[in-house]
Length: 231
Image (tube, rainbow, N blue to C red; front, side, top):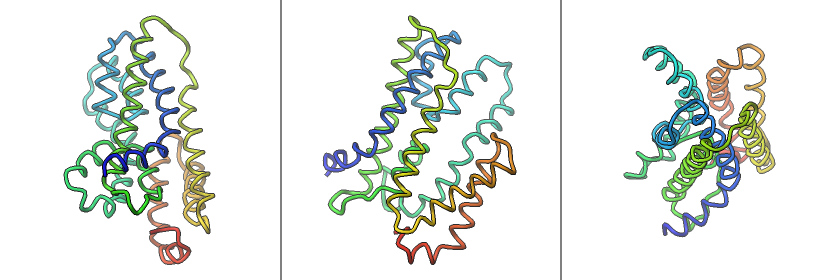
């Protein structure tokens, strides 16, 4: 059962593998350039497991001690996960002990796959989502570790490397858009992001976007379900 779930989950994570290894290596090198030992990117990739937050945490570790500011910044950066959790409430029911790791290990990419993937009927949903989450975290940990090792030998300008994550999400969005019979959810998500980005700054538009998406999905739930976009 577990092997079948692993075989079903792995192909969905291949784009994440490419993105996480590349960006994880850049992160590990970045940490080494700042003067941290290899243990920092290794441990942070396991404990924090939040790409953008880990990059910010590197600079926070070098700044004067400010726990309240650090907490608020971390909450704002990762606030979108509150909405991910709400969206996954029903899907995590009955998962047993796996539910705790699924909650802990949820990231943008794991959420995208676990929420949209068409899981074969003969594959256990809990183990499928578990392996998606586990594989993605292993990819990031491996990349960060390799980058930490290489960082002591190589240095280069990491500016712009985080664009690989943007490109990966574009691919995930297009895949979902093409799969839908009527792209109501894609239009709602894309439209909400555009409108909120025009109204808010680049650092604050994510939470309003998530709120708009949840509200619109609730208002148009019936036509969306009728169109077959939500199962």
